[in-house]
Length: 436
Image (cartoon, rainbow, N blue to C red):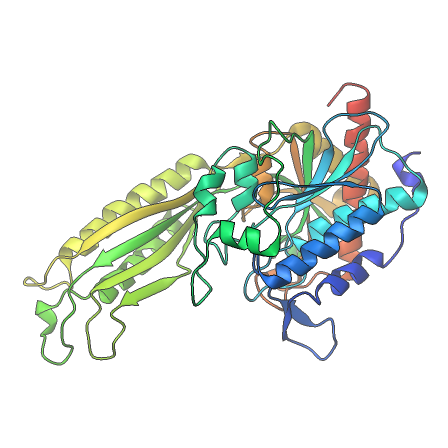
């Protein structure tokens, strides 16, 4: 049965998106019940609820459901032949002030593909699966793409098991929470022991390009490189009323200069840089801060461009720390860099790109689709290191994301789902004739 002959259930996808938003609905931005954001941090009670829901929904479809050692969920729909599944994947965890679509759209659209198969009595040539990757956001546990990175062999499970939460009053480890909510699985978290044939991901753009250019689908060909650092500035705590300016070693003042300089350097090199978390000690109103730490997120379309930004940042930060507060008698400060995570520039698979492009062009016309680079990292960055990977964008209203007001219309969500459905079937057909 060709893809164009499959009957879909109009409106079911958006209904499912809103149904699952009950698990963490928060931050109302309108009067309608669907006009809220979602707070569903990785391995929280709300995350357990949506995981349980996903398990039951895929079980109804006759899927084999596997949970690996880091909490990734693999729901596999059977095919005519055995072999690694062609997978669709994203994540169901959110930012603390997240919306209803980031990541969620990708998992639930994958579920909708399997529901469409079931409704039509359609059996693919090879198994097709949906993956819910654990902790893509890196909000509660401060590393994005956490569990997909373990699956891809980019990090060990032991490293992430001991990582502690940063959003709880009493920090807990990843392993503790996996055990607590019952999602410490026994399937090896490893691409060799638990292989997939390919990975397709549908996502909201999280930026303004598609909306501004009035395009329906973004055919994503790659993802820009990014790196996270924790920067620590050490000065000296002293009384604010008795310590002259030229005798201070003010860690916060120095860190502030670094934040401004980081933005200047990134802009000069056609990249991006931002600070998302800032902590200071002793955090007393009348005491000069002696220690400041802040996260640094730097991005560029190329690995070399990113390396240039980081090298310049480190050089300039050292100079700023050495100068202290700027006067001849200022005390020098110390600056340290703790590397958190690096995601190299990603280039998606040509066959997968072809499947997405042919599908989107056939559905919406070539003039309504564009090739583009993703500015944000996604679980597909991890999978692309091991298997052919393709990626699809739909427009985001006003480019807003990581915000309760993030929004894509029901029609845009369905357009993305249709593109995903057709792209996966095309790839399955290529596998059947030995071309993928």
